[in-house]
Image: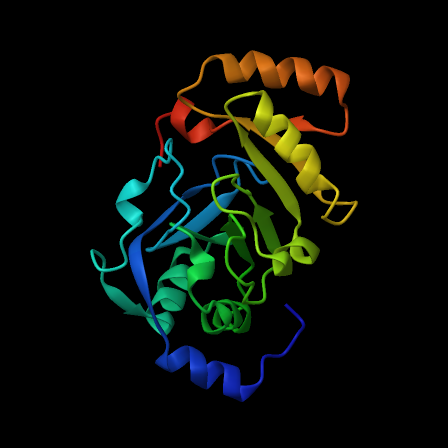
Length: 212
């Protein structure tokens, strides 16, 4: 990284705490960075309420410990990953500036995975935006999007995806991801991508390979 982080950001990172469900070192299992060496920081708290969510244990902030951002950054640095992924839950329920600035100061590439349902915060190298119809995105997310990833369980989700793509940068990657528990979603997306070449299929490869 060539950009310098002001001393005030480093000091803020030293005093900030976040509720953390888990951290782990693996590979990115889905999206444009599939297969990339990644250190994951899963934050607690989510008010979106997706019925098919596979991390419902992350929804409650009170069930999970608070950790200092300096400790999280040290753990990520020790793992020596290609990318650090901040996920949840819904990470934007928290101020992500201290953590993201600290990761950058440590020379780490940071990625955010978010539904965009809360005001944007932080400074990230890549933003994966996965909007949900259950809770409309905050307008501050759209200009930040690197990758649009829409989970599809039915036809209405395809319409939602097309609506969302009109608001993001034109060079953002466009992905449609089958909802894991809905078998028909695979064929629905396959046929859609064949007639809409600007879209790609995203699969949750970590579930097929049984890795974290």
